[in-house]
Amino acid sequence: MTNNEDRRSVRTQKKLKHALLELLKEKELNELSVTEVAQYAQCNRVTFYSHYKDLHTLLAAIFDDYLNELITYFRKSYQNLERFSSENEQRHLPLFEFMYQNQFVFSLIIKGEVVPGSQNQFCESLVQVSSTELRLGETTEIEIPALNYFLTYGSLGFFIYWIQQDFKDSPEVMAKKLSYLQNKMFKEAIVLKK
Image (cartoon, rainbow, N blue to C red; front, side):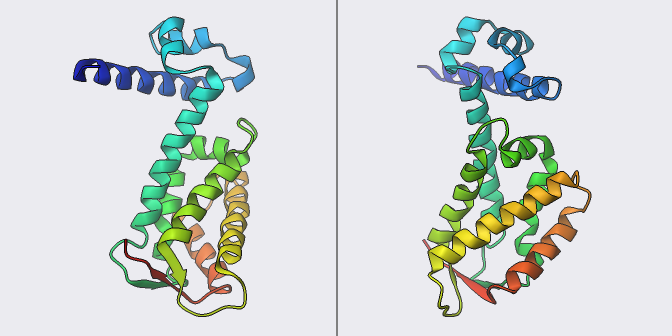
């Protein structure tokens, strides 16, 4: 494949992803057809099928894109730090800001109604990063992986609450609340260097 073909392929995938997200604002996934999405993206069904098996595969690719970007934001929260306090709300702010900027997509991911398992995919992305790049600054009687899952899946409930409240509180307020809750669990974490 040449660079022009690669660019064209990436551009087509981007158009298909945009089309599906726009159409999901109007209809449920099971009410949409490949033809509708392809037409909205100004391509045909053959082009669609050259990139994706079905609409679920396309939506899964969209979720992957957003979750990978979320991980980048998560890493920004402790980048250039050796350690951080659990009271530091700035550590959570990039996550909340990114989710706030992409409310529609994260509502789909976190509610888990459109793609079964998307909540787990969300949590597992965060667990993977925090389990390989962070460790607690103090000793605890609870195994770190168990605590990591507890904090991550507990945070999921917190994100669900925020979505159900229609993102009423600002990212800053939510980061402060999550910091307060996590401070009750641990005092500080150490960033592991790669």
